[in-house]
Length: 338
Ligand SMILES: [Zn+2]
Image (cartoon, helix red, strand yellow):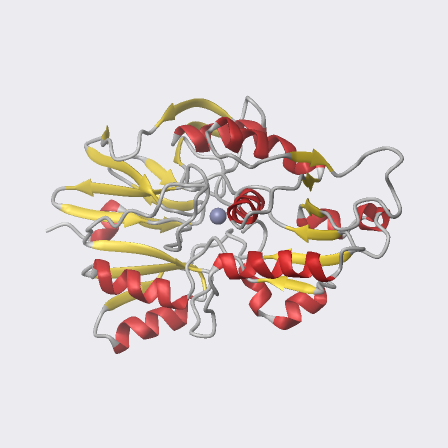
């Protein structure tokens, strides 16, 4: 009888698989890393070998440079690979383009590490695919009952309503450069907003990459145009990464309306802290109902809970008569990128 910890065990550098000799999303350089998606706290440079989906490998190249790993190998979704006798398969996680769950099977035991995931439909990436598993490892970024994300199209509509109400103000929207920015643009397009959307230079390469993978983002134009400072961009949507809002970039715009798209915008203090006038609650993570629905649907024999509000979800599982435990992995920031 094998124990789950024989197959996957938390180590300081990340989740480790002893028989396969690999780590999942390690936070320190290792010999072989399986990467769930391209966000910076999961996809780091310096591993000897990296196995990930094609999109995640491309995204890592864009963000970290061509030499981000010694060797790289593409994992095709749903196609199992053998690593030291362990069967490894990547399945879509619905988080950002290329994001995957990593499912490992060995001697009759299957553990699926979902990585970051969500269940709300997102036209910019493949939907989360439920994988029946003995043990399911879930994130808990928004693992409190208070977190309920409104429908994303309702939030995107609020931005367009504001634009109609304040046509003299540039609407500056903070959005993470991988995933959130492209999803928000796509949401706006689906609501019929055909006007050019301006993007900060830091978003350009990732938007170009999404377009190259078949995601139509409509007309995008640079947010920096010589001679169009001051009153320029009134009535236009301008997207920038969160870091730009802490810098002098914002001062280029006269009387801008500051918006921000994040699941954290549910927390008023966070919105205030960022000086956000229009808080758009759009998240690439599960909210509380999505988390509990997923655990009910998958009904694994055991649930491991990681990065986020682990205790509340573990407690919920206990009340449901489900076996669960927190993993206490370190190094995954709950706000850095998502
Ligand atoms: Zn992420």
